[in-house]
Length: 142
Ligand SMILES: [Cu+2]
Image: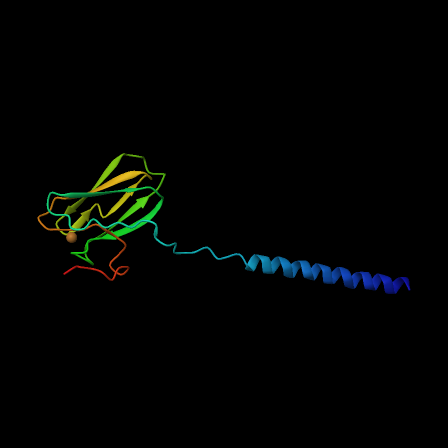
């Protein structure tokens, strides 16, 4: 009789341990995988419209993230990226030159709250338009 009780106790213990292991595994598996390619900052949406020679356009970036942009006239060649990070030394204003058919610098890092000015020092019209040529179907480039 005593032997039977002990065996019963053993069966309950083993099944309890198995239940805990299964529960542990399934809770680990239900954790979402970290996204290897986080979306580029979807809250940022700007379009300068036509920026003629010697004119400028500015936009203030508030939130951290990566923002792609391009020129609608010279897509896909004329593209740039702004990285907004609090690890960058804060300045009030930073400048991207529209020079020839390039953004210069094409890659700019700024702190949150920085006003970025696109200054057209070329003799062509340009735009600074958030996104990339594939993300918009209203391109007016030629
Ligand atoms: Cu352009």
